[in-house]
Length: 197
Image (cartoon, rainbow, N blue to C red; front, side, top):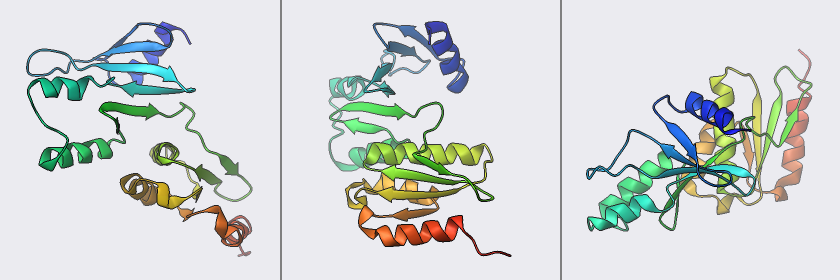
């Protein structure tokens, strides 16, 4: 995809007042109208890494706040910031704020047709996969698509509680690990072969 196509798609999905400028291989600086009190603009970078697109501040936000000796590592400030980040699925990776951007096609691990509504199956192995599945289900709902959804976790106890809570609000059925294979098979049998009316 060339720069003008990326720019057009980005502006269409985000906002007309936002622009991007290529700076390096698969790395784009994002320009927004937002700035700190001292007039410095927020640093936002769109980059492609590990086969996915990510928005990151490259650690600048918290670094900028530290200039004013604002401690965001504990107390009420930490709670407020953690809640705000969680609400928008932004990860604080050792001071770097990161937001993974799901594939534009909204990935589904397995789609089973053959019933009135397809069954979308998500394999969840970590927080990122859980966030991506949440975004996919939300987007399909916004588009008015009719479907059933199901998730199978590698180990649900390893998923961040807030990430899991948001996912639990949108997914139809979930299984905490592969050790409940008989229950998974039973659910699939009931869902894909409903009794005749």
